[in-house]
Length: 98
Image 1 (tube, rainbow, N blue to C red):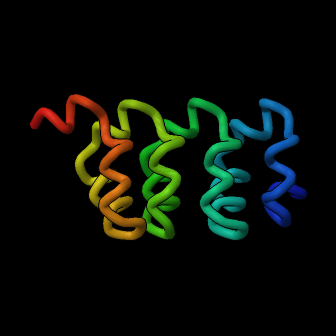
Image 2 (cartoon, rainbow, N blue to C red; image 1 turned 60 degrees about the horizontal axis):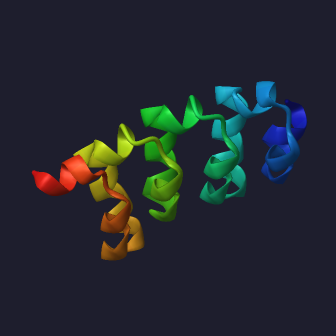
């Protein structure tokens, strides 16, 4: 856990338990970049606070989030604001219909 917090790049090779450790993943995302969100467990890719932390830094992690959060207007708009309109492509189909 300490290694993930100090060097988030190890998250890609971490056990499922560590990839599901919210505190460690949040620290890794904040420290070593939002691209680490794709290494997080499915459960954490559905964690709204974690995802918002990531997409507010750089919108590109939107593509790694859960379908539920790609349907969340605030999450999608935060991602687009930081990463560009092309990220609307990752918004849910349901959100597109609204």
